[in-house]
Length: 229
Figure 1 (cartoon, rainbow, N blue to C red):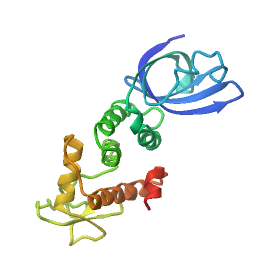
Figure 2 (figure 1 turned 45 degrees about the vertical axis):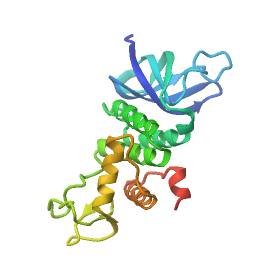
Figure 3 (figure 1 turned 30 degrees about the vertical axis):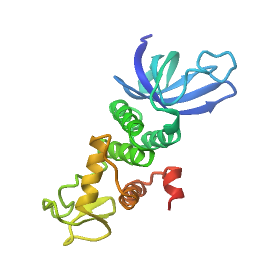
Figure 4 (figure 1 turned 30 degrees about the horizontal axis):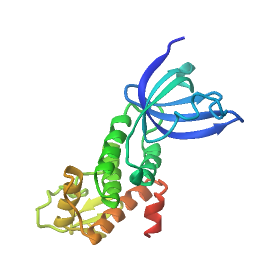
């Protein structure tokens, strides 16, 4: 039977029976896969110390029949992707990613890798917002910040826009959370450059915008977002 080897990022581990795990993994060349790691919960299993989130993994597996669950054969754990201080924020990003990219989706690995790298290079609060925004954009859940979602009018730099039902609207088409020109510049700046920082108020508004998108799609909010209301 055919075997595949690829780089991967672990999204989720689910206990199966007393000894095994079902693992959801984003791979670089094969998209999202689900594999059974047989015996992974046994103390002496080779999988026990290697199947960890926030590490680059090298996997070998056999695919399941008709695209079903495969079987994990081997895994090598490589470098950790984030500093210890960013681990909790990064795990929350992974939990959202688990919803964005489903089995069979060819995308996800590069997007998550980029998002985690972005988070790790920024201050904690700004980094998590930037990482989640990038993932939502890559998954196609966001429109751009340069046009009204309803009428399509291009945004003038000085215009105040509004965030409503996960969309950007001009003043003629709606209202909601105000998205000022300064906030739009700040969001773009944090994503593109390491040394750009936002005011506390702008960071909170960015979180409100992300919260609106996640709620619109029925995605469970990260703990840190729910704690801040």
